[in-house]
Image (cartoon, rainbow, N blue to C red; front, top):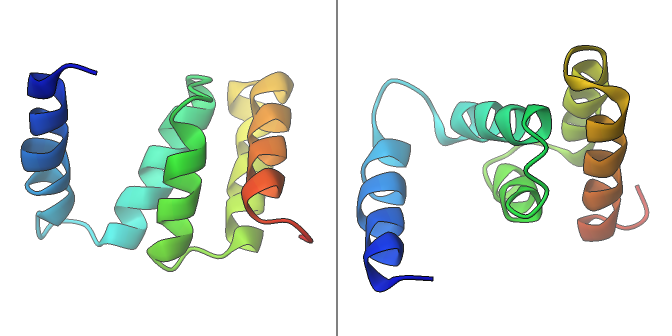
Length: 92
């Protein structure tokens, strides 16, 4: 990854956008997970699933969000996302 991209990710995305007052980190996580599932961005999804849990979203809530999205973004996108969630949260 380029150093500029890494810098922008750290300093703009996570230090600015994620810290704005308009939404809580929990809400931002739900939005981000939903967007990643809908766009089938499975490479970034494990990081953001874990971040969502770190921001107070339960695995059950994430599973419900993903199941709901199956009807809007497609069954395969949801199935893949649920597999990724199970991989980072075994036993659920």
